[in-house]
Length: 370
Ligand SMILES: NC(=O)c1ccc[n+]([C@@H]2O[C@H](COP(=O)([O-])OP(=O)(O)OC[C@H]3O[C@@H](n4cnc5c(N)ncnc54)[C@H](O)[C@@H]3O)[C@@H](O)[C@H]2O)c1
Ligand SMILES: [Zn+2]
Image 1 (cartoon, helix red, strand yellow):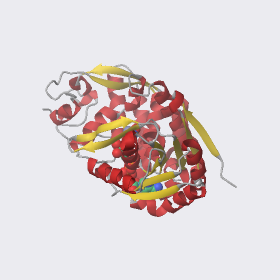
Image 2 (tube, rainbow, N blue to C red):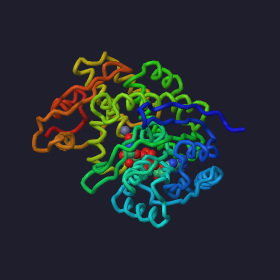
Image 3 (cartoon, rainbow, N blue to C red):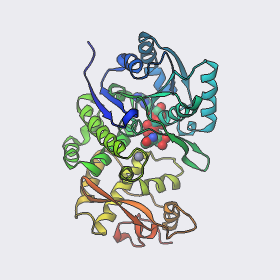
């Protein structure tokens, strides 16, 4: 008997697709891919640590559903979100004679999803794409929404496309092998979803607390489902980030600055987001936008999830220039996503110096004054 699944729909007219959530469901993937894409051939793009564990189950399932499948590996790590790896994959798809009717399956975390999605968006002007996320972060965030990209030496995600998947297949049983630190980082985006949109969900996360760090599907399935539903809802209303979708950037203004300043080393994206959210919440309180205590509540939950909440020490001027969109115009305003209370955010235009006031008391990172 197949394990039960729950299905959410990302409503985008003719580009609508299902997000199917379950545990132990990789054996059913092939049938769902065949139904969603009508493809008869598939390229499964992955990294060794994931393919080693789950690649066989995926290719067996695809074969059982009548799809000829080809496994393609890229080196693990975000450096593979590159033009070089994309070109290698385009070549590999051509060499295997995959045509317009083929499907590209991303089996892995957000790195694989973004790269495979970029290749699917561009190969032969676009082929069908299916996400099989295996990290918590990819399940609740990266795999839903259709943003795909590669990095350039000058920065992350600078070349990409909107290419919606035809299906997102979440098997939460794969989280059992994900390192605890990666699970915690994924939980940061779950907390973000609750903080921006759903106070009751936030309270449920508080009741579960540290138990969320165990890879227990029973506990995680409803959490993944709610976080995905929030992302799906926001994306459905604003596919191309014209407005509402910006609220998903809560905590990300400072997070991106931290990632840039630490050159993406030693800190995971979710960890930077945890720090960024607490910072944003403190600033929101200081600006009178959020009721007192909101930041402390957010911080307490993140700490129980073993996430960092204090910005690493870099000079204030380094933070300011990392925050500035236009490095020559430090007064240029940034759309800062402010907390209005747990469960509600609002985007407000602020200049970097307003986001990061000179005194510590106002809640800025503990950097030296410039
Ligand atoms: N497109 C979007 O909307 C979006 C949103 C958020 C993040 N992203 C992108 O996602 C990427 C980060 O994703 P990530 O955090 O999933 O990182 P990742 O894909 O690099 O995966 C993290 C690590 O976990 C390993 N791994 C994956 N699944 C595993 C499993 N089940 N068992 C054991 N090990 C496993 C990987 O091999 C890797 O070493 C970044 O490139 C980011 O830009 C994209
Ligand atoms: Zn994020």
